Length: 86
Image 1 (cartoon, rainbow, N blue to C red):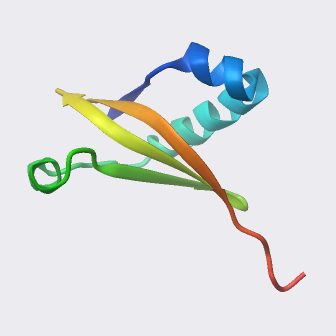
Image 2: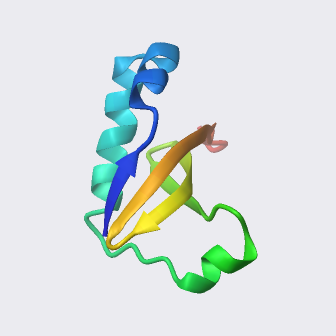
């Protein structure tokens, strides 16, 4: 499965080129594994969600479209997890 990230220029303008590179690398790593979405996921909710975890951050993307083996993704938000043991 492959992906296409929507609105890269808007993400870069608002959050910076470094952040865009960071989420792009995280998506590349995530999509190296087997990512599958079933047709049932698209019938119950408007946009299925993909969570990409990297270190202490979790990036949330909505799947806006799927055509053949390409998922069109929209960046939603970042959740930062703090290590409570340190």
